[in-house]
Structures are given as C-alpha cells and as structure tokens.
Amino acid sequence: MRMPAFVALLCLLLLVAMIAQAPQVLRAAQGRAEVRLVRLLGEVPESDRVALGRMHDLRLKLERGNVILLRRGGEYAAILPIESLPGTRDSLRYFYYVEHPNFLWLFPGQKDKGISVVGDGGSVTVNSFHVRWRPSAGGLGWIYFPDDESTRNVSFSVVSGRTVDDADPMHTKYWIELAPTGAGGF
Image 1: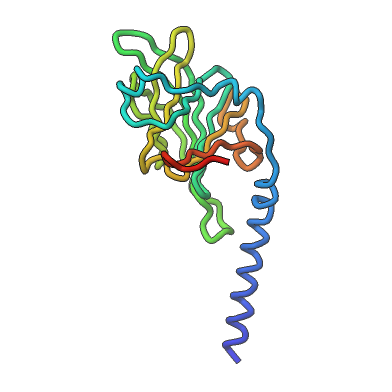
Image 2 (image 1 turned 45 degrees about the horizontal axis):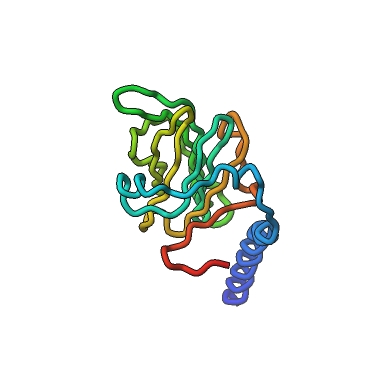
C-alpha cells in the first residue's frame, strides 16, 4: 500500500514542476527584435580581437539607463553600468545582481548583489558569468563575450532601467544567444 502513495506523490511533484515551467515555455515562443537592442550591437574590430584574444563576433555598447541581462539555464545576472572612470587606466564602476536557480522548482534561489570596478580589457565577473569590458570615447564602453566555456549557453538582453530592480528577466521577451564558433545560424 505504501508504493501507490509514493507514486502519487512523485506524480504530484512532476505535475507541479511542469506547471512551474509552462509560462517560460509559452514566453519562449514570443519575441521580436527591439530596434533599441539592435542599435547597441557592433562587430568586434580586429584591434580589439588582438588585445582581448578569442571573442564572439558581437559586442554590446553600454549606455546610461540600460541594464544588461545575462541568462544561463535558471541563473540570471543583471549588470548596471554606473560610471566610466577615466585616468591612467580607464575603468568602469558597475552594480550587479545575481539570481541563482530555484531549489526543487519551489523555493527561490539565493540572490547576490554588489558594486565592482573593472579596468580596460578586464573581466566583468558576476558569479559564473564572465564578460570583458573596454572603454569607448565619450561613452561607457563596450561589453565583449569571450568565445570559451564561460559563455557557453549564455544569452543576453538589454532593458531600460535606472536600477537592476527595474529589470525583470522573467518578463524579457528578446534574448540573443551566443553560439559556439562555427555553429550554423537560422
């Protein structure tokens, strides 16, 4: 008699997990390119490839009022550029927020946040996410995506906001996924 109760409990947990994932699956079918996001993308110049090493072909322009979102599986990170600090070695001060995956689909994951600084060509590291930063004349600089394990299965997006609390990755409709070098498109 214990076995049917165990099977029923297992089926109930599976049903709860499927219901929890249903909105994400439905939202994945939505999406249209936001012109604002496309305007922020650029091709990595050869001089930056030489300075930074192996990078994906895309780079992302940082602008005030934009929050960069990174996603891998159930883990999300938000990066808000605060200010560029020019000097002998240019640097960027940024605020970050990380939302770790849920535990057993029911309990919210841990949340971390803080402020950090990165120098020219340095890594912006937010938990398991690693991107690179370089300055630009008159702006907050560019984000580069290394073509290695640190960006495998990573997607990114940009939303408007003055704080990372304004950015809700669960309601972001358009994500750009970084594919390995040589992977086919469309």
